[in-house]
Amino acid sequence: MIEGKDISLVYGDGTKALRGVNIAISKGQLAYIIGPSGSGKTSLLKLFMGIEYPTEGELKVLGLKMQKGQEANIRKLRRLIGPVFQEFKLIKGRTALENVMLGLRFLDMPSKMIKEESKNALIKVGLSHKIDTVVEHLSFGETQRVAIARAVARKPALILADEPTGNLDVDNALNIMSLLASFRNENTAVIITTHATHLLDNIDQGEIIKVENGIIKMESRGAVQ
Amino acid sequence: MKNIGYFFKEARTIFQVDRLSNILSIFSIGLIFLILSTITTAWWVSHQLVNMLRDEAEINVFFQEDMEDVNINSLMESIGIIGDVKEVKLVDKEESHQRMVEILGKEAKVLELFDSNPFQAFIEVKINVEKLDTILERLESIEAIDYIRDNKDVIDKLQNLISLLTIVGVLVITATGISTLVVISHIIRQGIYNNREQINTLRLLGAPESFIGFPFVLEGLFLTVAGGLLAFGLVYLGVKTAYGQIGSNIFIPLPHMEDLLKSMGVFILFASGVLGIGGSIFGLKSAKVN
Ligand SMILES: Nc1ncnc2c1ncn2[C@@H]1O[C@H](COP(=O)(O)OP(=O)(O)O)[C@@H](O)[C@H]1O
Ligand SMILES: [Mg+2]
Image (tube, chains in turn orange, yellow):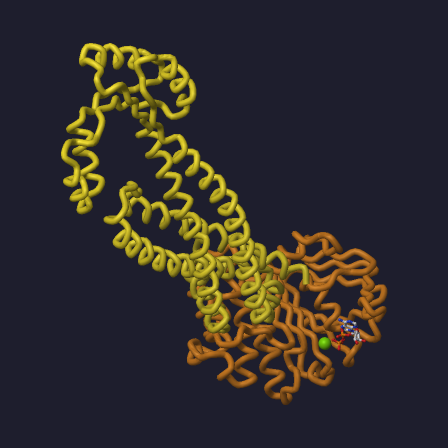
């Protein structure tokens, strides 16, 4: 599913965000990427989202080689995953439903199913009553759920959520984490990043991947059936 | 095309985000197309006119007034056997007079000042205009002919006018084409700029460039076609007025107004379609570089 060998990521300004990263995430896995702010969590996720590609090393996501020049692979990967961006990236002026549908329009999904799947996803995240609300009129938590619905509706093999706990209080943060984790199944892996290490005390399932200064350490906790 | 409804809705949104610029560009494109169609109309009308004159090209052969009918007949025969002569017809004194009455219309009263019919009989020879010079040469060798009147000068002058109009037309078409492309690609780039966040998000979600670009192509197409229709409306009014004014006052046969308008309509629609699509693709391509 995800296989990275000796990956490093150096940004244009010379910042070394990741160094010698080895990582393996298997099909249907649940994984948390944790570490302090600036440690490289988002950078790692961007590699899996096909937004950045490794400066050095080898990375395969969903069997697709992520490399400079592999535009077709990058585009394909972006269609196969369900990304939940930290800043959500919803389209202003559109309803929750329109936003979710927009993520599906260019996938190989019959047009009849697009609306149906989008509604289902919104129901699953608990927004059945806000389907036709313009996203600017939603609360922070609701907006976040629309972003999650957009990712989930795509029926992706990989859901990637960057810092979904953001500035939420513990209860809400745990709620959103378990909502995301609930979409994990044998065909869908879920990866969540967070800087709120203390939240993981309440979590007993999934792989924990610690990032520090661009270097990672894998650590397992509990089994996912 | 499962997303066609979405594409139209997007195009409408793009239009409304920057409504004033979009409306202004419709007017400027309308103006550009008005210039384009005025020149094209002039070219088309004169072209038709020359073709008509060519088809009706004729020379008038005058002979000694006292020539006897037998001799006139044999003269006509010898003209008839010249190659590329289509038709030979005798116009006698009465018909000659009658034709002038028709041409003068109300002014025909002046003819009453003459005691006798002042017009001469002549032989009307319909010819292929391309062969005018060789035919004239052959005619000159026939002794019984007094003099020959041809409308070569008129045709030549019109031909020159057409050449000029063709050059002007090509220049105008090029200039208007380029300005339309510039206007459209500019407004499309503006639209892309206004929508940059959405475009970026769509890219991150893996949308193909064609999916992202199609609403902009639709918008460009809409702007030029709307401008084209505006121009056509003005051309329609202009042509109607012009035909109403001059149609009854001059002798030259104008092409049928319906034909002219139909051709102009098809031409404007086609040109605006091509330029709209071309301009928006140009705008999309040039915006992508940034
Ligand atoms: N686009 C970028 N250009 C240059 N440096 C960046 C960029 N994005 C992140 N960085 C730097 O890379 C490091 C890791 O950042 P990031 O992956 O965002 O960390 P985290 O998500 O764990 O807070 C930081 O030092 C950050 O400043
Ligand atoms: Mg981050």
